Structure formats: structure tokens, C-alpha cells
Length: 458
Image (cartoon, rainbow, N blue to C red; front, side, top):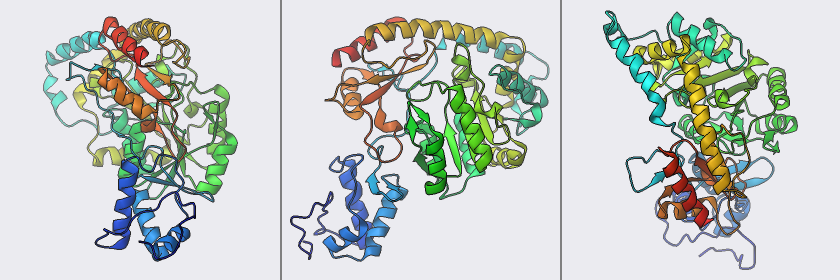
């Protein structure tokens, strides 16, 4: 039992050290991790100040500091400058989002996977390439950043978003997630901090953790970063970059305003911030707005890919890279062995060159519109409004649910969805919401069945 008397003192965490073995800081960190993962300490809970906990447990302050630091490195804690240490909002959430299509008993509405219906053109292009005399070269090593033809295809692809660049500023990667991982590894180091939206794509969370990079939520208003919030994070959190998803933001499906895009570009230029802009959903919009990169091309790494619009299996991402970052990013892609396959890059370029990609985008949009009309009808009153071509939707829950509890109930009902806890950044209590995929169910009938099961729970 603790030596000091704190019987009536309001400590949010009172660990029992009676069974501790080994180094005290490691044992204390293990107890803290257990209490977080078991739910005893809930997301957003403010932990006791280190000095007060040290007095309560009759331990050295350095022991408490080491324990907190160890749990912080695991992503379990989030320290807020001048405001203490909190249990991270995603501490007990699984960050990896995998598609469970192999389980036929589950209607997959968690992972966002485009319908396979539109893969026929990709298959036909690949078959025609295999008949060419030089087809064997498609199985050799390719140019690390892509050939001139492939980079020109990237210029064309980014041009559809209203962003003018040239092939000298384009590199290719084997998929958007790999492009994001390479950008983080190339441009930041362990201990660096990056500002994000308060809820963000889980892929950036796992990649940042891999490199020891810390994500910090930026203050927002109406689902958008504010200039005051960014400047506060620069001054107080010492962030060195931003990661944003302006188009059909994941998980909220919000579309960033043109004013906010210009504001982020302005602040990035003034403060020399590196902005990683994830434009993977840009071309799904009815009338895509220009990316942030078009207003600050020397500060923004702009990532787009074919996964949501053409085919995820092509593993083709186009990255706009400013001159000052080009060599570092290209080297990272090569060193991490995530350069694109010559075969897939050639198929991607051909689809873009002859206009087939445009036809496929139009077809996907038509399919998604029909699906979203069904979502709006069945989940009316629960689903947040957004554009009809959004591949994902944000569902608000009744007060008696958390995102995590609804996720469990939905799975018991045979539907996979993802709770807001998985996407939360920082230390605030997660929203009572889940993200659902509009595109993954293979047919409208299966989509309708999944939505009706969710409606019954709601």
C-alpha cells in the first residue's frame, strides 16, 4: 500500500503496487497499460500530475516520468502542453483496418474497397500488354520514380484536380499508403510532431508510430483547421508539418472549403511547414476543388492514387514533390523497396492516356450516387449529410452507445463497421460515431441488408 495518506485526495488513477516485480518504472507502465486496455481508465481521462502520483506511491518523480514516457511511446498517452497528460482517445482501439471479405457471414462495411465491377477494363489492358513483344521487360526492375511516360500520366491525372505540375516534380509509388509512409520517413525524424485533424485516417497513425513521429490534433471549427489552431500548434506543440485530407475526409466525409485550403497554403509558406496532402478522394467529387498544393507547390507533398477511382490492385500512386524534397523522397521509396511495378505503372498510364480512366471514374460515381441514396433513406436522422459521391459515411450514434460498443454490436449482427475511437487523435473523448463504407458491399442488395441491420441497432 502507498506510504502516504491520500484517502480523500481525488486521484484519477490509484495503482496497486503490491504485486510489482522488476524495475519499478516498467512495472508501473505495465499496470497503466493494463488499466487503459481493460477500460478501467477511459479515453480522455486526465492522469494525476507526475509529482502528485510520485507522492501518493512514495516513488521518485523520475520513476513516474519514465512510466508515463514508456506508455506515451506506445501511443497510450497524450501530453498537452500546459494541460497535463491524458489517456489517448484511441488508446484501446485497433488502428489497422483490414477487409474481412473472406468471412461470408459478415457484411463488410468497415474497410473502404471499391466494387470489383469496374475491373474489367484493367483486366483487358493487362491481357493486351502480355501479348506485346516487349512484355518480358514489364517483369524487370523499373525506374525507381517512374518512367517519363508514367510521370506524364501522373501530370495528366493531377491536372484533372485543377493542379498544374510537370513530370520533373512527379514520382510514383506502389500505392497511396506506401507513398504516405515514404513521405513521413523521408521528411521527418523520430520525435518530430505533425498536426492533423482531430479525427484522421488510421494509416497515417500507424505509419507515424512506426517512425516515432507524434501526431497532434489542431484546433478546428466546423470540421476544418483554423489559422489560430495551426499557429498555436506551431508555437506550443512545435509541429513541423501538417497532414490533411481535404476531399471526403476520412472518417467524416467532410469537404474542406476553398478558403481553408488557401489559408493552410499561406501559413505553410510563412512558417515553412511541410504539408502532406492526401488527395486520394479528390476525383470522386462532383466538382473537385483545387488542392492545397496548387496554392503552395513548394511546401506541399500531394499524394493521389488510383485505388478509389480505378482499381486498388493497380497499386499506383502519383506524388507531387517540391524540388527541395525530391531527392529525399525518391531515395526513401527506393530504399524502402516500395517503388511501383513496371507492369502496373504501364497499365495505369495506358488507362489514363486513352481516356478509359475517365470513363471508369464516371461509372464509379454513378454507382456511388445510387448507393448513397440508399444510405440516406435507411439511415435518415443518423448519417451526416455529405456529397452523393462520398465512398464513406459518418454515422452519429445515440447517447447510450460509444463507437467501440456499437462496432461490437454491429459485428454480432453480422456487419463490420469502425468506431470513431480508431480515428481519434489526442486526448479528448472520442465522438459517439462510426464510419461506414458505401462502396465495399458487392451489391445494392447486400448494402441494403447491412444498412437495415445497422438501423435495427440504432
